[in-house]
Image 1 (cartoon, rainbow, N blue to C red):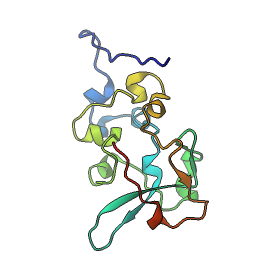
Image 2: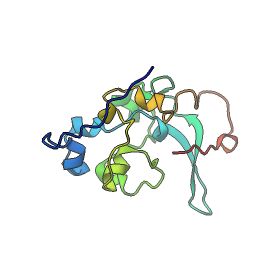
Image 3: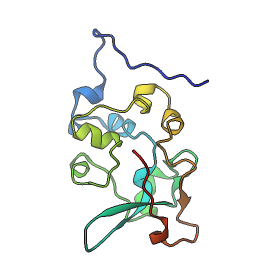
Image 4: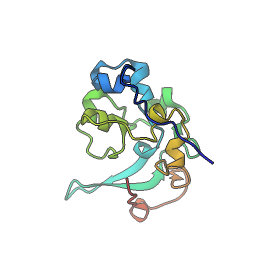
Length: 156
């Protein structure tokens, strides 16, 4: 049986940093901890030239570990994948393709983190247990594929 921590409702406890700070105000450690490890931002996307619409595929960057949904070479990812987009507080607001569940997007929009977010649950596995991550849902771009045939829509 899996149990989850209830959100802290003690009115005397100091609110967590993500409820007190903007993305710009966060330390690097706080910023990095916002990533829930879903892996969705590491999926290949198709942007249609005629409409500007962005669609997700289930094809993951070759550096994404499909079990942990974390980058296998995070610190050097832009060296190995030059078009890897490095998220920043300024960029978050302009990236309409970020998942609606993305912590960076939620905080930028003035909303709270989801119950399954590791900072809320206290367990990095809840993102997987809740079925939000790309674990068992994505393939590596190292496998042969046609991106047009790999477009997906998952409930968020």
